[in-house]
Length: 59
Image (tube, rainbow, N blue to C red; front, side):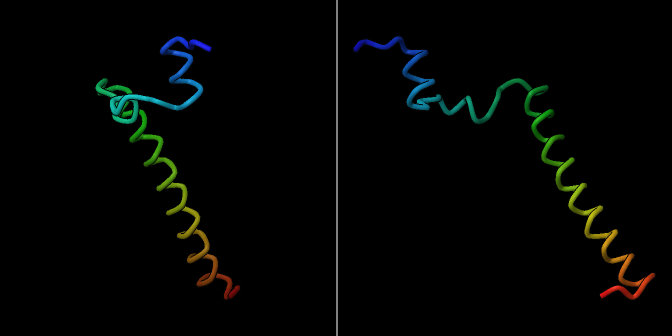
């Protein structure tokens, strides 16, 4: 069965290296912002647990 290049890429995940590192600065910034958002969320959770331990002597 002959597949088009696009179908082959989708089926077998043959993406070019540029698919992982977008050349567009806006896309790269958006990916970075998404990662930073998760890092900050994790940091906020850790800080909240740390504060709760000290304020309420939970653990």
